[in-house]
Length: 190
Image (tube, rainbow, N blue to C red; front, top):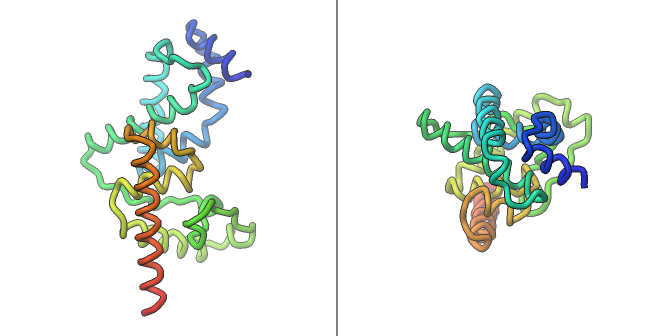
């Protein structure tokens, strides 16, 4: 358990150990922040806030095994705090198309082949389709679905990040997906 060993070192004040923990999941943190913030600059600001909070509060972490779940919760809360401060509405406009296939919203997304991933027209069309779909559901459903299918987080981690019971997370995802399926079905019948 390299993570546990690094967390223990970080709790004792070892900055290098904390940096190694953060760098091991740097892309995951960035994608999560980008989902909330909507642009790279704001996502980086949120990550900076998360790093400062992690450094200041690492000793408060009760279970070393929970470091990544705990740090993602801190990042999500940093994003929400920045959004409140800036009074922004977030529409995700920089999706990584290799992580999402809009035809598979009801199940885990599949990777897109490299020819599709390199086609800017297909990518922008997918992004518009996803954005249009996500406008059809409320913010809580949108957040839960993004965390589950874009970031592949488990229900418990989503519950920790959103600070609601796990049943509420499952309900938001289920109801959101149902609404998206209804919308897509109605759109195709027109």
